[in-house]
Amino acid sequence: MFIGNQGENKVERAIGEIRRGLPIVIYDENDYLLFAAAETLDRNLFNQYKLISDNLYITLTSSKVQYTSQNRENDSKRLQINAFDELLHLVSCSAGDCTKKLQCSKAIDEYAITLLKFSELLPYALVVDMTFKDKDEMWDWCEKNDIIVLDTSFINNFQQNQDLYEVCKTSLFLKQTQKVSIVSYRTRSGGKEHYAIIIGNLDKDSEPLVRVHSSCYTGDLLDSLSCDCRSQLHQAIQIMTDSGSGIILYLMQDGRGIGLTNKLRAYDMQRKYNLDTVDANRILGFEDDERSFAIAAEMLKKLGIKKIQLLTNNGGKLSELKNNGIEITKCLPLIMERNQYNNSYMETKFSRLGHGLRVFSFFIITSLLIYYAR
Image (cartoon, rainbow, N blue to C red):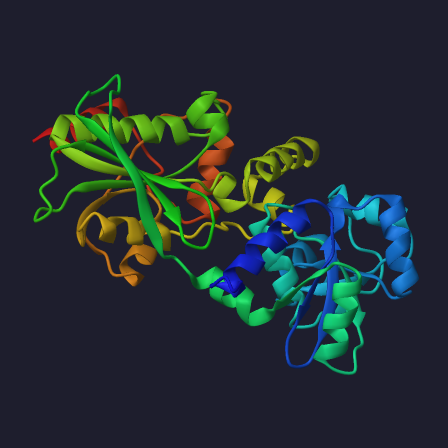
């Protein structure tokens, strides 16, 4: 039986295989690459890869390379790995320099890194260059070894697909207001669910207040003092309640898109090496912000909304929404009070991530709440 959408289905299956520690083969017109997630490997699996080739490499993203070595190029690299203990040292995310000579990576390596990020694993791929005389020989070898094969075009299409659909909608009763409904969306690519929290009665011809909020398990749920996420979420709800309506777009992309476990790793890096959140992400091999807000634009379009007033301090959200067809008539700030635990984090957002509003006061916050309530 033929099942449609073979490309997307294969990428979804591949992500599951990668998280289980199994290898994947990806290919394009020039290269065949066997790879696995470095952090999932044990000594026995590593030795099995050594039987395939003596030339085993770990991919290092440009962020990792720039932070941990003297190499200032803007490219990812390969680092040859000869022993399992070397792999363990690298996956432990040491802040030390890479002492070995780095080698140029191949373009196809970026697809392996992309799949690891989809899987919310560390972006270190154990890669082996494979040699097949043609694609038929590749297919035969992969079938014999029960390995999923991906054309790089499948990965491109999966990454670019922002199509979503509504799953269900129901009323919700919040402490600040009981006039709330919540809509659940799923992406057709099989990614995570996202949610639109609609406060009050929306007039689709107006320009509603909108907050694009990325999930934060430690802040939103545990009330962590290390960030300002929960405060921003609840202030946005209060502003919308006072003004009569608004929308919270709650996106499941914790840790600025690296996932909860990797965010906790970044926290550990900050404590261990006295780093800020940007450098901690770079040590792990991630970009400063891995999030995409294109899905938020699609959610607004599904709700029939094309013009909004955006509640944010992050200019990146504004520009990405605009680039995806949403008109921003006003960009309104959220001003958070600092404490001894989040002060450094807040300063990093202002100084290194381009967020606005360094200064706040109780008077300013109160004045803004009165303004929004008009």
